[in-house]
Amino acid sequence: MGCTVLLLPLVISLLPGCLPDDTVDITTLSKIQNYIHYSYEKGEQFAVAINVPKEQCKDGYDESSFLKDDKGEDVKPVIGKNNNNIYNGKELIAAGTTKDGHSEFLLMADNGGISALESLLKKREAGCVIFYTLLSPCIDGCLQNENILSGLEKLKEFTGIKAFVYTHIYDEDKNKNYLQNELMKIADYVPLYRCGPRVGNTCVQCGSPGIDSSNFFPQLCFH
Image 1: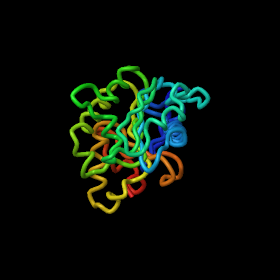
Image 2: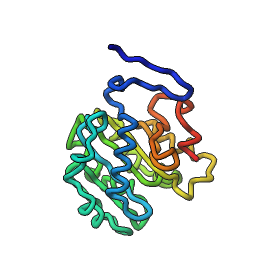
Image 3: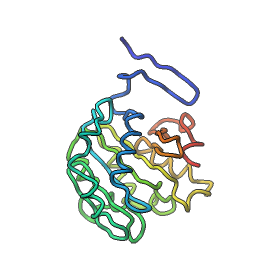
């Protein structure tokens, strides 16, 4: 049986098994975000990136075997508040709130060598990489930083499934009228999603490279 595509306002729904091979299943993404949040959450901000077999981002997700070599009790002590430590695990890297507040920067910064994110990407070339941050990257700092842009470029080059996910808007950015335009810069590199309570404890896609953002959910993604 071939793919059936249903076109609805602002939504493209594909029957199971018809998702493009390089696209995360959005229901599974919600489960993954929920797992990450409750397993690794540390303070008011943290970020993680995972590189898992791609079937775990499709119908093959199984919580009982997901990230079991990177347990929360091993990760949380490393990424305590106000330190610059990075947890480097088998399938996961993580950073908490730093002295400057930018956990995304820690994971993407190369510091003259290879970044934690780049090392993670090399561990499984055709897997599923999800970069998750509790708070959206600050638009007047993080998204202007060369290390963040370089990290996004590395994500773009990754040949497997990839996604950039956030849950809350960074407080200082909430009332900025250029918030949407700035966060959409991420979607120029990699599919961008928001997951969590603001969107009904599920996930919505906010943008994707080469696709008009009006096809997605600006009222849910950027407010």
